[in-house]
Length: 147
Image 1 (cartoon, rainbow, N blue to C red):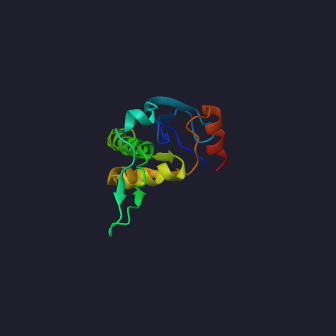
Image 2 (image 1 turned 90 degrees about the vertical axis):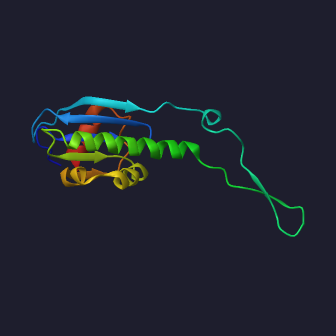
Image 3 (image 1 turned 45 degrees about the vertical axis):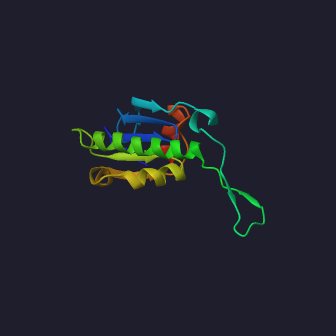
């Protein structure tokens, strides 16, 4: 993939986001980190207050059913993706942001898409469904060049 000079690249997952800009040109990619955000790795006990609930069956049989426990980590990752989309919207409205490339794992990419505004959608030139947020920038550049 050819990535023009000054293209903004968001690399994210449910816990970390990197805003990079191509300081190089179409032929020589040079991604530079402009901003990064990370979510604290909270433990279950910090995210919830009680265990899963129980329900009694109707009819007096005395059977108990444990209700499915909420995935609080997934809720936090979805909230982080929504917050990242809001940051992306602010950046998309700034002068000098004409093209966007989004790199995220499929679930995070789906969550981000739910929160894109019109300005962001109009500037997206590519979406890459890969988890590359913890890879070195050189590897990220290599993956993007190969697409």
